[in-house]
Amino acid sequence: MMINFKFYKYKMLWLAFVLSYISHIADGQTRTDQLVDLLRQPSSDYVFVVAHRGDWRHAPENSLQAIQNSIDMGADMVEIDVRLTKDSVFVLMHDDTIDRTTNGTGRVDQLTWSELQDLKLRDGLGSFTRHKIPTLEQALALTQDRILVNLDKGYDHIRPLCAYLKREGMLDQIVFKGWMKDYTSVLHDLDMPLDSVLFMPIVSLNEEGWDNVIETYKDQPPVAFEILFKREGDQQTACAMINDINARIWINSLWPEFNAGHHDDRAVYDPEGSYGWLLDMGATLIQTDRPRLLIDYLEVNNRR
Image 1: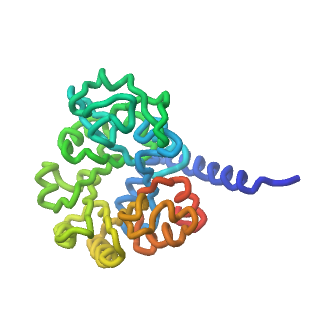
Image 2: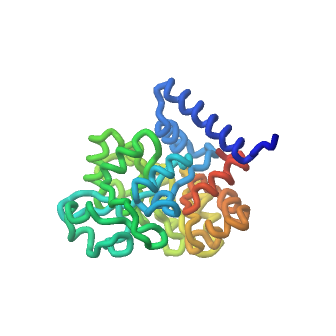
Image 3: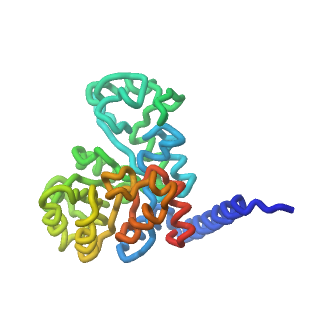
């Protein structure tokens, strides 16, 4: 009898995940509880897989199906983009217009939810699908206790978002981020202690003053720093500073300009030159457009 070893491997991995999940439920701990505990332990070498806009290669970006796919494959976090409609409904949309991703046109902030809810989302090839624009409320209902969420485009609305998430009991499952935001600015914008939320500054090593931004957090570390860099060089200094502050390091494997060429498409034929290099730099959160490929790599190398 011929054994399908690949199928056997995935079956055993899935069984291990189910048994682990049942164990945590028995302890009164959800999967997101476990992930938040790990996220707040910078010394842990567990590597978080963050699915960029969900599993957009197999479902429209920022759709409920893209989120569900990310949950099903075992990603630890899903990155989604939030925009506010004209009538103050938070919806999932990356661009400030709906032109690229739907069969409609116009700015999100100039359209009402009733005008958006029947539009069709396009897939990664631009074809129309049966999927609709989700509200943030729908996305949170799907993700609660199942996967962590990184809210992009949400910093401008961080106070009302935090208030809403607190009411929903999900504030501790959401990671916020802000572009080149120092500690004092974030504290003012939040109007609450930094350690009451999962916050991550985005630091561009291509800009002057990036080291000063990191330095402002030395006495009150965020959960992580997201670093961007076009060329190799400064990332080693940045990673050393972040390790001294005792925070995790987030690196995007999305496009070469974010990681000096150590990106997802390179990982297809040179995983060590992509994911291996990012791990060597100290990345313990990797945002990827190929979550399944990254999960497989980490499992083979015993990082999950």
